[in-house]
Length: 434
Ligand SMILES: NC(=O)C1=CN([C@@H]2O[C@H](COP(=O)(O)OP(=O)(O)OC[C@H]3O[C@@H](n4cnc5c(N)ncnc54)[C@H](O)[C@@H]3O)[C@@H](O)[C@H]2O)C=CC1
Ligand SMILES: N[C@@H](CC=O)C(=O)O
Ligand code: NA
Image 1 (cartoon, rainbow, N blue to C red):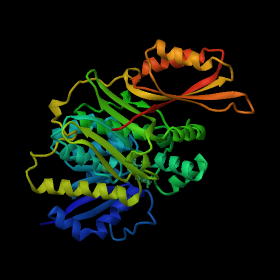
Image 2 (tube, protein in one colour; image 1 turned 90 degrees about the vertical axis):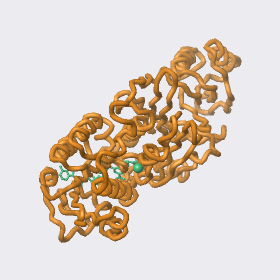
Image 3 (cartoon, rainbow, N blue to C red; image 1 turned 120 degrees about the vertical axis):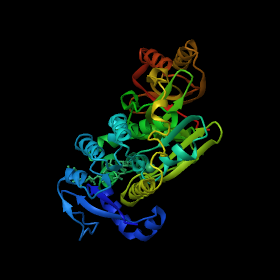
Image 4 (tube, rainbow, N blue to C red; image 1 turned 135 degrees about the vertical axis):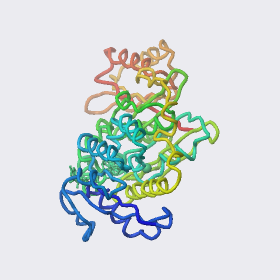
């Protein structure tokens, strides 16, 4: 059988990795796909020193790939929402299948893209868009298809986890580690997407749709990054037996779906609390299977290429078998997506770590405790440190039981109104992830 012809758009970290893996493992890949996969054209603005593409036709126009009648599958690896969207739509309109690593594109324009792909009878595959090399989309769509998914929680930004790990283990400065993550090809073109949680929110949006059968709703995701975390809070969390990780959490409740990305305290003995560096991990809890955990490299040249190539193999197989019997884009049949609402953050429930800077006066603790008890918030533990010599302020650290976020917001406002409390209260969510 003749090889499937693919075009790579964007020859950066992931594009270069994809070319290299396709070339190095060509024989193995053809044995799995049932036919060869040949890169017939590349669109790139410049060459990539980590990838020798000599002999493959190169253009600087990505639309030339989408319009190339020889090409069966367009691989979008340029990133961004604008040109990438036009490119993918053009490829679909031309009847081509698409493989992309672009979570921003899928989270924001996926509903439109999938509708057009279904109309045209083509596949859009995006395994590399979430958690890099971990086959989490395949696991959710296929491996867990018998379950009602209760919740999922993941470390889904490699750059952010790399920064937190290096800061905690080696005391390195934030900016210094971020620059290294960029040099290693982990970071987004705009690294504020990584450190402000936007990239993780893109990925969480995709996972939640596949887990719960809801349309993609990135605009409803609550997003908080890692830039406001302090080493003091990392230390206090450890003293209480927790690690702080940047998590994406999606939970199905009777009234709606929680969709939130934020730093989170996790008990230090959980496997996911020990996922370090660029590694990602996603826990998925299903009613039949219980809790499961998926772990692997969340970013980088070849780990991400691994997922891109797996999608190419899937599409190639689908081309040679019954094209009407495909796994739906969001795991549920398009006409079966549910309108179960995504909840505003105030309606979401979790436990909380609170750090309050209090004046060293008797009775402060009693005031704090009564504010919580008046609002029906139970205290799990309380820790009061020595007064800091330079300002005489006492850090008071409280862990609460689970409660709706709006009640904690209300308690924090009452704390901050006390004469004996100075500055803003630090609030970090806590998840047990059992
Ligand atoms: N780097 C990583 O570890 C991962 C990246 N991704 C996603 O993969 C995509 C690509 O990311 P990277 O390879 O890291 O980015 P990159 O910046 O290394 O590569 C993108 C390449 O596309 C080229 N490009 C951009 N616009 C173009 C245009 N209009 N015409 C021709 N070439 C164009 C750029 O010159 C660059 O060489 C993004 O959507 C990113 O979010 C997903 C998972 C992991
Ligand atoms: N910038 C992203 C790349 C992979 O999706 C990350 O750091 O996780
Ligand atoms: Na993946």
